Amino acid sequence: MGRKLYDLVGEDPACRFSPFCWRSRLALAHKGLDVETIPWRFTETERLGFSGQGKVPVLVDGDSVVPDSWAIACWLEDRYPDRPSLFGGEGGKAVSLFTNSWADGVQHPQVSRMVVADIPPLLAPADRAYFHESRERRFGMPLEQVSADRAERVKTFRREVLHPLRVTLERQPWLGGDAPRYADYIVFGAFQWARVCSAFELLEDGDPVAEWRERVLDFHGGLARATPARPAPGLKGAAA
Amino acid sequence: MGRKLYDLVGEDPACRFSPFCWRSRLALAHKGLDVETIPWRFTETERLGFSGQGKVPVLVDGDSVVPDSWAIACWLEDRYPDRPSLFGGEGGKAVSLFTNSWADGVQHPQVSRMVVADIPPLLAPADRAYFHESRERRFGMPLEQVSADRAERVKTFRREVLHPLRVTLERQPWLGGDAPRYADYIVFGAFQWARVCSAFELLEDGDPVAEWRERVLDFHGGLARATPARPAPGLKGAAA
Image 1: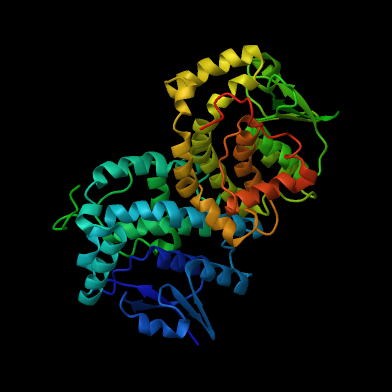
Image 2: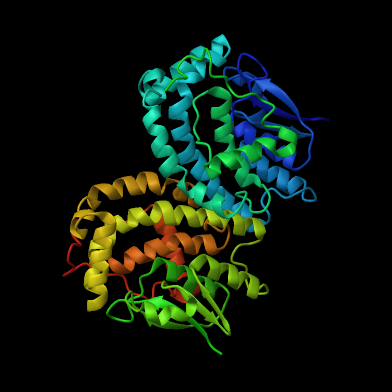
């Protein structure tokens, strides 16, 4: 039985923008494991019924069904111990959960506010309606309004939110140390999400975080770079 | 030659409040290594001349002199590989540097703002003058003013700054996983700093972070708990 990953897509099935799915795709590549990605859209929750929940990523590995990006990383580490390690030991796994919590709770909400208004045009019609309605309910305002202050917000994001990341990457080339590990894929996922969905630039040239992002884009034969960045021209709401 | 750690003290040499020194003291205890702590005060920079710099902690281990808490942790891990590991592998060490950067750059500035005004009365006279002057220059305002909004600030601190810590500790008992590791001592250091310097309570009962703090206080035979918390009565600026 082949290995499959259910992966969020836009109207164009080549548009792969879920930060959580990117964590899992890079984790699979890190382990040197082939995978067939199955395009999935927000409103297709029924198609995930077999997994007991309604979100991606979901990994189907032989007879095993593993939803949730963190659970997938732990599954891959346990199931394929002879492949390159995602965590570099039990301590790395434990402390990576803090990185995971920081990404989910601090990095993602900031990135989301800056790019959310650019996402609907990328989605299939049914998803577009779902996304608009659910995200406007979450933020309590029109999406255009959520992202309206991003030219200001990005300054604080760079200076304060990314500060611990920058200090770390000034001292070592990867969050994982001398080589990338799962911690890199956790944090990179949100930058890839922004890159695919929005022409709004989160990082400045010369920032060690921007240089690290390039290294992750290049890694595994340019796996993440192969999904194109959102182009600037003709993009609604891209000018900030 | 004995092992020595230069450790910041108040006017009372039993008042040990440096968050960075606490990282190193707990790291030494984790390794099961005896150490003589040498009381040191802010204005005694000349006494550290042998270390090539002017801050504590400084570890003197045989013929080796190691300043800086992170460097001390790495030294202990490399020098005593057969003792319990501080990092749990190379991945743990690398990802702990992100935790270290988060503590230094996000947690510490917040804690500092809330407790800084309580520190001068604890210090020896020469240190008191130095501390007042240097910290008021850093913050650009009187220390009492820096901490004046702490009753409000602590709400955001608990809800937002500690969020990634809380989410992690809801899923595992220690940042290090099933047992404490250096990541726990990094983050605990700032709570111990606040506990020793100020009666202002950073954490609420029932918060998983508060429960974890109790576990660290109990660990290693209650090493950190043996340094008493600042009592509330008669404390200048304690009422917020």
